[in-house]
Figure 1: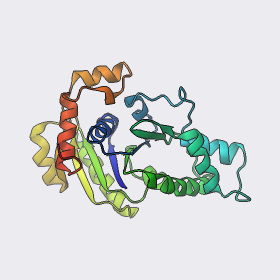
Figure 2: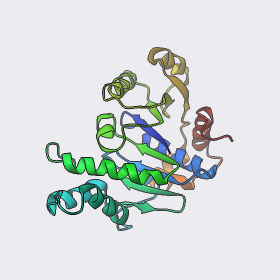
Figure 3: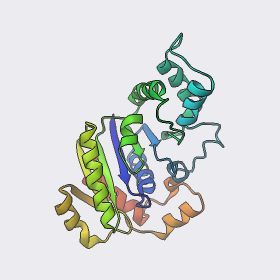
Figure 4: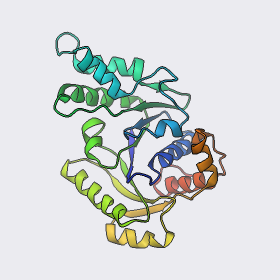
Length: 256
């Protein structure tokens, strides 16, 4: 399985990029996919046209709170890993035609989550063996990602906007990844829709990472997001989607 992680400052287009990568994989007949929303803002589900409550599912954080805090789960009898894994399958995993989807959620309370954290991480490591690709829409920093989801990924995609803070975010994210000993093959730079084309060479030179393309700004994407429509339903010739496919070709994930 290959794990692709999208990071960046808020508003850079992480969730839409992740959703459009999923669309590219689906159209290239590369599945099954597991899509993971690790961002507390929980935008990815909306981009995919999924409302967990409407389909009777819960975020992983809600399942952890219910299993280990409200119901007082212990290490006696069924192990924490087996207990939370069975609940993820039954109550946390949305199963679609071309992909499955889970949302981490927001209820993290430091100091009382050592056992459930370890159980969740072990359970997800087992669950992800069923997929060819896992796409993670992460929060701005990598600390949360490393603790909760995965310590080994294939490629990291840093979304850039037109600010100096965006460049600093990329530097900090790379440093954190090294500090927490996260293993990854590539750290790529992707221009968000507001990123100026003429700055690509400068960003690549300053950050020492490969710049693989820019997401084209597109009013149809804005309209879909505004109205809560799934980006997976965009026409195949949509300009923003075409730009994502070009990025996936540049990184070797799809051929055409």
